Image (cartoon, rainbow, N blue to C red; front, side, top):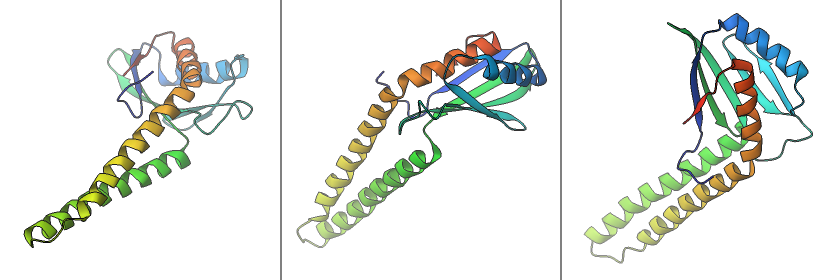
Length: 165
């Protein structure tokens, strides 16, 4: 499951109304034999795996419902736990900032005719960004089975196969 997607999305349109979808989610969450739990909010649903199955890379599926001409538009996004997502975004931001400032400082050093040692920091920042991306891909691979559980659960509830993008 190698992909350039960081947070895969699902989209579909179902002929059911939002209230019917909420009712079906409640019913299916109580009756499912899959290790899935969920929370219902005013305009979206958040699906997780149960505490017994959860690990560091376990996905969360946030599903938003909007009225559409043919029923209800369903949009969902897979992602890690918010703490994991925040940590990755911090490291991405740090790596990008390191590359940006190292490139500027190295350029200034070159303009002044000095040894541009800051370009080594730029290379280090690029290596950091690549390592973070590889770690995210490994995490997606470890959470792939649970992602499939959440996706198949959504398919059952919506009576429709959402497209994974």
